[in-house]
Image (cartoon, rainbow, N blue to C red; front, side, top):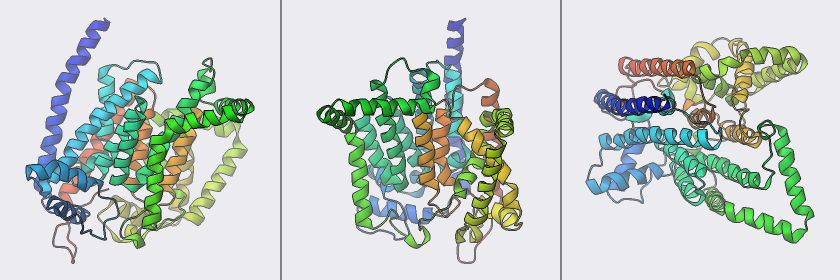
Length: 465
């Protein structure tokens, strides 16, 4: 029975992968036929890459906010082949999309064996990896020349190398990820912290129960172990710290290089600094939790009973939480000028038709935020306790300083979360796949059919994330 199931999975893989590649490539070609001109930020990305292909590395467009990682990768691939044009630049993201499938599949395979001690069928791993690759806010950019796909490539590759305990190479990929997008330094820090606790795990008793591993008891045991090392004497404790630092040196080097860059650049953003000023925007976490629920609802809706049991049992805490969330929404809801002016993004329409039009609307969402936050946290409570804290901390650092509500900022936090979910049930995979298919169909239909023009732009405008 097992052998027949394995053969069926292998047969499914052999059939499915060529169909996926053919379908995505066909869609890519069609969308490139529809959108032959530059699309929004491509007006900056493509000319800058053309300069690099021509050997001009001294001229820089001041409107570009990210480091030139994408342009360097594209130049290395296309320049020797003399294929530096918009279509082939977009092909880099097509390749990156398939690479995301490969990376997601291997990450799930690695995590399922090393962390959950359970083997998933090849069919299930492929289905989950496909849903990650086809995640609509990420998959949308597969046919355009943007940084999103390649940025996810770098983060997923770094995570896979970390899981395989290849820290030096993972750190090198971390440098590349930062060159593609500066905020990826936060995910380098995430992996670094995970590495610290991986090393500390080896020091803690192997009799640690799974329930302890994912609760605050784990943190207590870690603190106890550190205190024990300190009590052995300064020599022993110093040796313990030095060993940790040696193991972490590849990541420490990346972080030090980034700090040096920030000091030299006088900030994180490379260009257009006036439009990208750091702020404190706590509702970003609420928006992310709602966004997260929209795409992962099959995995989080199952916690509705737990939620109502929790608020019934801890009703005072629930009331206080609702009050705090309401205060945050009231006093800290911020609006970037781009949201009000740029009608090429979904957020523009949501904000102007609902959030901005009806003052009460943002308060009506507070109970929804309360549930989506609970469900999101509940969905990762199987992870090591420090990993749960680490993830939420890094998500906060990524999102809270952002004034602009931009679904693209949610992509990496969502993809990482999706990789860490436990073994799904068949109905959850089917429901997620259907959601992904419907949203992708709608987003490309809107992109193709909804065309309008700006007075100061010669090219047709379309709607995207």
